[in-house]
Length: 542
Ligand code: G1P
Ligand code: ZN
Image 1 (tube, rainbow, N blue to C red):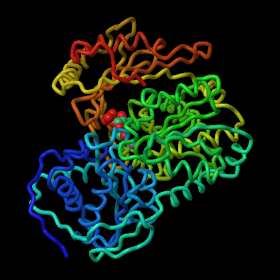
Image 2 (cartoon, rainbow, N blue to C red):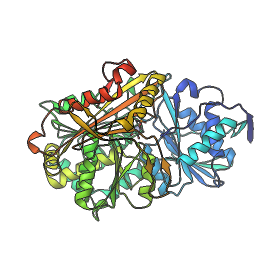
Image 3 (cartoon, rainbow, N blue to C red):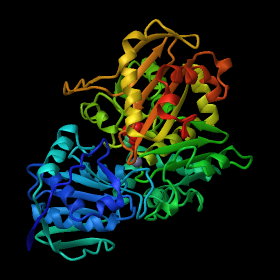
Image 4 (cartoon, rainbow, N blue to C red):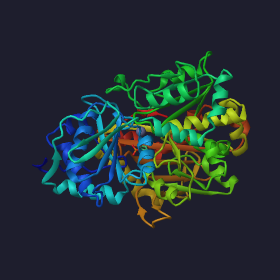
């Protein structure tokens, strides 16, 4: 029976670039999650009788919200919910299911790489029928609905057993509990030469894949160990836990330091990789060498044709604006389009749908292709393995040869986390105010060539997105970029992106922070980071 429940709006349900993210206790407030789920459906049209894909990264509160979504979807008239067993679906796997089964859309429960647990983060995100994050038009409508909501509809279907595979009828709707890995593994098998990868492992190739107790555990086990024959023990921390074992499932050099240290050690395996909470990010480390995400997208693009799924070549490459220009040089050499978009995967959607880009990447460890409409951690791992298998070279050889061919883009991101919001806003406002006066001035011996507040003109739908980050470009191709994070859940995070291009191969082995020292100092001179934030140094350097 459909029950209509009276409710009052919350005023803070504005979805960011990756859905609505809040602390668990916020989501646990009365009707909070229900309001948001109903607001999603209120913002959509034409889903009666259609299919909704549903799953999450397994974090705390995942199971409870899965049940709520099923009840509200049934009451609102969906014909079917396809839910991952145990409530589990990685973000790229959910994107694939939406596309493969022509679902109306999907709801993904995740706060990506943020920590999980009773006092940590939770998130709800809607993906549209192309499998990608809802465009701004839809997220704006969801927010608008959430501000006026007075009631939601729910069917009391009791607890659906989401651990048992199969189909049940509930509240006039079909609920199909599916294997979260099978379709995704099949997709990977269609893109990559699994025989070649099996031979690589048979030849004694050793790797680590660290799932950080998050969603990619079952995917890694099935694909790497079961299907490709990687040694048992290749997959680490593969059991998804509601609190990710108390760790931050963020595959960077801070939170995956154990992997980094192992890869830099004398007994390092050939290849090390990790993925984040919901499986869309990747960390790639070769024996003795870390591959920056910006370099990774360039190198994957340069070598993509080794894999059957990309044998015909790439239509184009897209990267977010703060991502280094390494991919631009590959696109130039291949004679294909390069697109510079604002931060956030959703901006790649139109380019992928229009067939203008094949590979996309962000400096924040997100890489992917037109196979789904999300970034995809395990996909990046499999493409790297394919390149290694076909070229018969180590990661180090592949990277250094790439730099010798294209030049090296030294690159680093400095994050200042949990800065007081007013102080962070003041820094950006002050910076905006002086943009016009910067060109031609000299900072630490570097001449500013151009300074602007990045605006993106979408070549497909003509939409314009303004204020997407402040760029200060220097003569010679170096630059610093400043922007505030759109995904944090407490205070503000200032991100400073620093890049220097070095064409000379004899200067490719300088330590990164040292290579960037002048620019780091210049960034502080220009933006007054220390004085505005009160911080002497960044909280995270990647
Ligand atoms: C961060 C990353 C961005 C990514 C997003 C979602 O956003 O910088 O590249 O798309 O997470 O994973 P930010 O916190 O910088 O707004
Ligand atoms: Zn993620």
